[in-house]
Image (cartoon, rainbow, N blue to C red; front, side, top):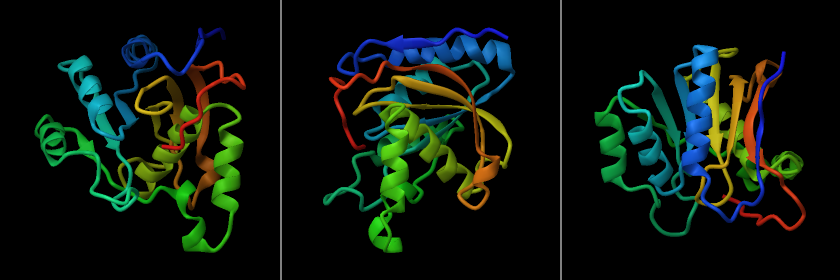
Length: 191
């Protein structure tokens, strides 16, 4: 089997629309109709909602958990309402790679840093799929496409099989659709 993978040369450019276009191409080949999307402020979620409007795609949008930032959540209530009115899900779950203090161990940070060897977006894709599955929005083994990225942009998309944090052995990355090259000069942003 041969599949095309797109590598973005840098993470400073906004590759969101190109990432969505690449995902749309892969949806045709896979029969998948659920996308799990990371969105810090709601901008990426709204772009995805508009891009996939009337294409039979359901979005599960995963923002930062409440109280992640010192002030109020950066994902507005108006955006939440807009997405839900269009039939999509917005899920605020616990970001499991940011729970060192909760569990008294640095294992979540070690896992997160290891996954960042592939790219920030790969780390976030895996995290949001775990969060959505833990929240009962995906079934273990269900095929989906996860979209995330670096900073406030989408630049990574993976075809995955869902797994929960209790069933990590069921979580799979089946295909890479796109990701940054992830060179040492790449911007690092822990979102």
